[in-house]
Image (cartoon, rainbow, N blue to C red; front, top):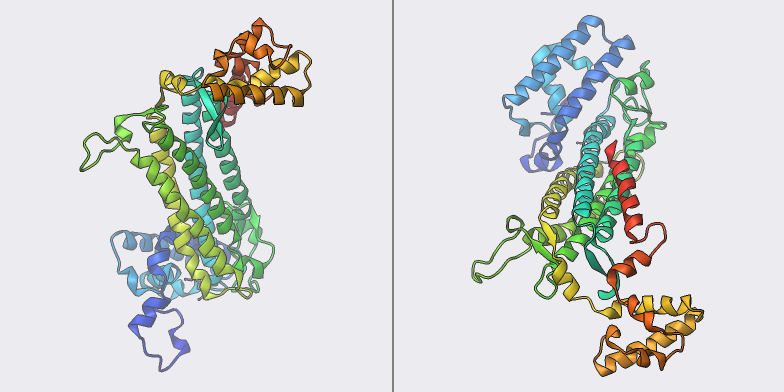
Length: 455
Ligand code: ARG
């Protein structure tokens, strides 16, 4: 079914070429948006004096009937795209008046309008999912607030922290992800409709009014830019790929830290799987799948980016290829967030195991601080403790196992109270700065986090 078939006299339909040109299988998800935009456009035509009240009424009821027909099942495949489908069915339903709906309108502006209508709802939905996940992060942090945890750099034990501090790191990553989505909404909320094919419309359409009626903030500023712009989709695809990246990073931690070598986390049975061969296995499949699926979100971004980068102004059929990355990314990331949330609820830090893996070398920096407090310049103190660490390793001892005499060989500043340094909890409490792992700071951090998600 073509809207433009009278342009040609002897055009033969080649089924393969027709199918290649068509996008109905990829853009049918825009059906609801197409109906919404068509209703608003019909009203704008009425306000502009192009159709009278009676014609408007007929178009609106016609569009309702199109919705019913599609619900009860039509052979959508015979239409070139979702825009063609709606207009053709409308004409089938109400005849001549239906042919007026497309006055001054182009599919070039329809497609990008529909995408924005669809996307704004989805972006808000994703933001809700992120907030939900953030709330889960807060409750996990609160449940295990006091558990001591080894902080790593280079995957080598670095300094002790609170588990709650460690897990709250995810909260702030998600907060940035949320802000990226919010940023994308600013452009999404500019309405392209009324831009025509590229140059604008000769009709007296009040685009500001049209934008308002469709729930957009304002009309787009430049008709040529409006029909060629897909950067708002790239913004969302980037934001989505960053969500995947953040979920993947923490998934990696949960996978590694639940292995037998670490045993920091016990995974509940419902978020674990086993093996068809090895009966003892308890596998973290869900976290692995999140980590595994994360990469493809970047490929969605990349494929659209490459589609756009060489395009001349303005609309080009290449743009039809934006549907698959858009639709897949949005639906798949929603699933990823929900699965991750369920799995996060199923992890339990096991403090005895964690503490049994932490040695007092993690407090070497605290030992440096001890000397600094007693007037030794930092670089000197750092060097002294470096030598002590070297010696302790050589003798197969932990820092806390050295005697005061041994300490004193390296600096006279060491006193009996040096042994008070070797306490993980005290180490955490000695941190003072805003944003640090000090329990009071973490409590304040959680309070600020809670305010951010309570609105
Ligand atoms: N199916 C097309 C797309 O998704 C709609 C726009 C078609 N415009 C055109 N001039 N052929 O991009």
